[in-house]
Image (tube, rainbow, N blue to C red):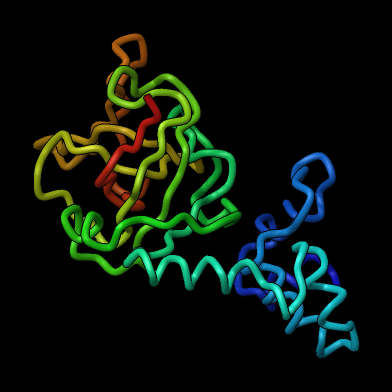
Length: 212
């Protein structure tokens, strides 16, 4: 199967799947478990043995870490949130749909409920990469983004926003003329004014998780 055909079968952009076949891009020893399970089903229809595909994720059906992780999450009353690869660049990056999901991260169900009423399927985790939002966000901070929130109801909140083909985490203010002002907390980075059709909100940042 071609990269595009496999991506179509997975239901993801071709660039997202191509990342896993790029030796200069994906350098981990094993594929993500959820991806391997999907590929096993797709390639199984082409005559490929399921165990051979699952081996690319480092496990077999009798000892699947995904199942163990799910059981542990249930015991701890946690939910698993998708983490996207490399970092939701605070200085810019490709569109959010191009970011591959590489793992799932457990978070306390009760803690998440205190942040948002959105289901876990509407949340994703990313790691910042850049300094445009310092000191609010530091390089490699973890952010939780709520994709169910797409409407600005309060000014100057922090959002994941796509502008000009780039995705970034910025502070957003709506101007009287309808333009969106995209602001960085770092005073050395200039603001951007985006007009209708030039930018859209991906989701609101509802939490920052930082190692101290």
